Image 1 (spheres, one colour):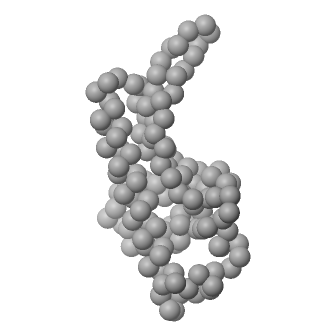
Image 2 (image 1 turned 180 degrees about the horizontal axis):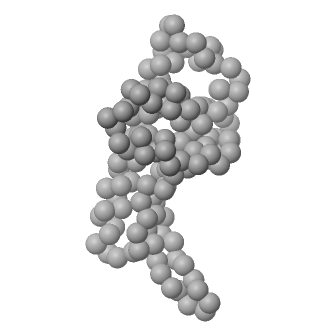
Image 3 (image 1 turned 60 degrees about the vertical axis):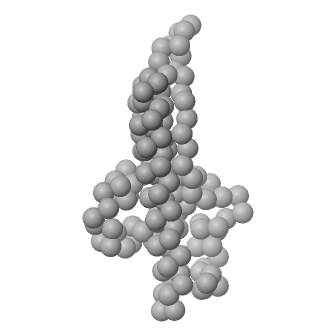
Length: 131
């Protein structure tokens, strides 16, 4: 792999020691109002390392038929080098039957980020890639 062709800044935004790495998180959020639990939510969030996000965005047209990637590019927010680009992939008030739906969104998000990473690795392996 042509990792040596990356600038130090780009290496850090792709493989930094303290992150950022891409990940998908599913959490249960208990919302408390005054002195009691008001509602409980299921949330799925994506965290995409900056280099991956920015390279995919640069080649966005190649993903024009992938609505999930388009949505991530449109709705992610940069939260600094430690977290990268963050987006909510699913948020719904918790009910037992919603857990299956949340898991489906979790899998879509995982698959999408893996697809983005594979694209980046393919680009980095090209001999004529200029960073």
